[in-house]
Image 1 (cartoon, rainbow, N blue to C red):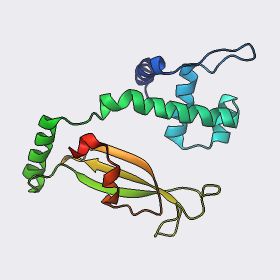
Image 2 (image 1 turned 45 degrees about the vertical axis):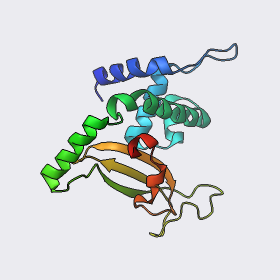
Image 3 (image 1 turned 90 degrees about the horizontal axis):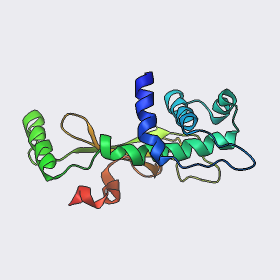
Image 4 (image 1 turned 120 degrees about the vertical axis):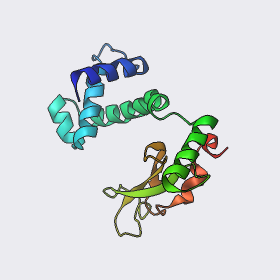
Length: 174
């Protein structure tokens, strides 16, 4: 990631990050919190290796990554993945008809099992038919293959098909 992109990301996210220093300790700066999260997302490194790199505790790194990924989604989803309006749905349908000869198609929907390590005390909740533990990523794309909706976190024991459509927000169904 370039320095300019990082600076732009920080400018977008800092207003959403709320933290305070206490008498016992100074808080981790917003810039460092974002950097920790980017490092995790870019490398897939363990919390332990990231905590050693940034000289922070494992639990601190874990909490920061959880908080910042939620903030990234909340702050950027309307900019980079807005809900299509009626006019955009019509354009998507026209593109499907033009490119793929599929009239009245508003999206291609499918799921993908993402392999994970077995979570403690989860039993067979995430154990799928492919004989490994996973969560399911469900996504819908337009005719050009660009995502218009994503949802993650379904238990792996569920199929990767479109049975999760009932979980889609109402604005996508109307």
